[in-house]
Length: 448
Ligand code: ATP
Image 1 (cartoon, protein in one colour):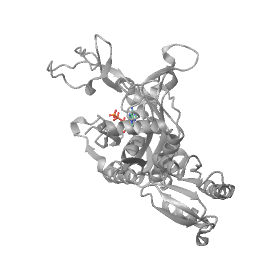
Image 2: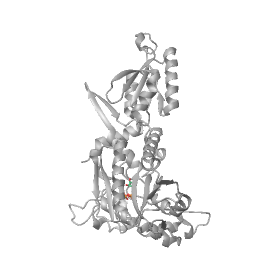
Image 3: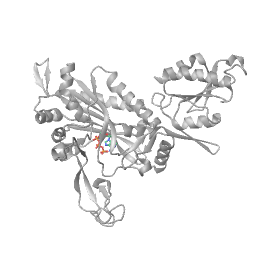
Image 4: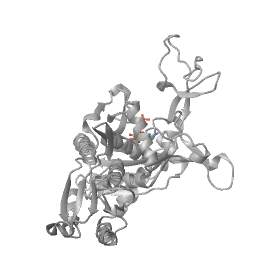
């Protein structure tokens, strides 16, 4: 089911509050590009850190790399991207608009044909359109110098397989992981940051003994689901799609897509694929460097098989925003808030003096702010407008707690409350008093 209203609300909030802006906006934008503002950067960083923790740093079988975006063009010839990384493109003969064929519905008026979404003309036959961005390297403008912006991060791991084996001598199974930018010349970028031309991926290549692939596939699948839940993605909206054998890529023996009910429909969020030994074997042939593994048990060389969990950072941001956006109506007044988990929220807490023109309050608030900022970093100072407005502003960006230093803190109203602060909860609006000495522990205990 489509929910255009939710999409509009998310997109306008993201822009207004500094999460995501249109790319090159003052020049009229550039289709398929978006710029992340401070809160978007913080959110993406928290997503990436949480992923790193779940899939890399909490384990001892994972090796993270950061390979160059520009790679030797032979990499993409070998992987099949030069000849086959394409989408079917259809063009309108009249207004010249272009579409991805599978994204245009069949015409009701002209059965078996597709019509231009812009002018209604019958669209021409589909042709394959390669989605890699090509550029030139070096000063010489000849075809030998053509390189591509990587369309996925995976290849950066396969080409470093031997380096990791030689440097670290890992035992099978082990994985390589990478977070980084990828570029695809999508025919029709659309749906905010869902389908863009420049995006970020988090990918894993998990190398296993061929006969053990099924068990590792199952355990990575569970781990992916666990992570989505930990991130705060609405699991009611996540669906596993077992890709039918007839639709599998030629190198894949099993693929599961994790789809999400985005406001514009159910679409792929992440993927998990068993890619056999296709990549290592192809790159062995393509580079003439043997990419194999000396198995100590059997004393023989094997080419490990690989399982690839693949995640998009930008789609994570969108799925998360669609999961946590909430509204509460009270007496005709609507409060909107983002129910981020504290570990993921761009800002963990806002510290405020109740009144900004009372030096005693400001001084105390600054002391509290200093303590929290030093420990948690993601802490903001907010003394703008009245307290109700501050709460609304922080709710809208998903800050879990507002900490207010008020006259009680100074012991002026109730001596029992001296040196305690008001902690106001984003989701319930409930307020409690917490001693200044215990405020760090209060937050820490809710972060795990
Ligand atoms: P789609 O079918 O939606 O085009 P895909 O199957 O081509 O996606 P993969 O090649 O499996 O996607 O890429 C792995 C992940 O990278 C996807 O699950 C998604 O999260 C992300 N991703 C891929 N293409 C884009 C894009 N154009 N914009 C944003 N994220 C993307």
